[in-house]
Length: 72
Image (cartoon, rainbow, N blue to C red; front, side, top):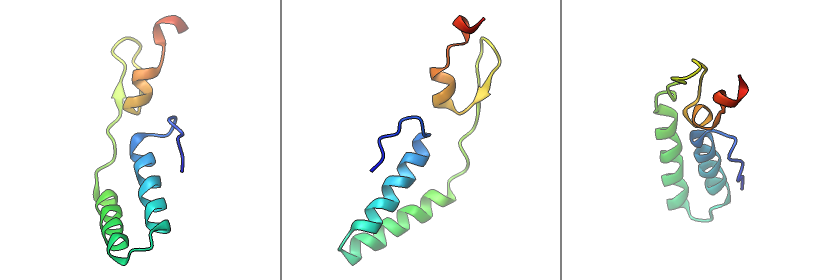
C-alpha cells in the first residue's frame, strides 16, 4: 500500500480501493469495492486553487503546502 502523501488525496483513495479489491477474498466485498471505484470514476475532477499571495495555480493540497512568501 502507498503512503505517498505527495499524491492528491483522490489518487491515494483510488489506489487504496483498487488494492483492497485486488486482495479481498470475499465476492460481496469485491462487488462493493467495484461499486466504490465506479462512484469514484463518476466524481468531477478536483478543482484547482489559486494562491492569493502569488497567483500560483494547482491542486488544493499543493497550494496549501507551497511556500511562495520565502521564494521571492
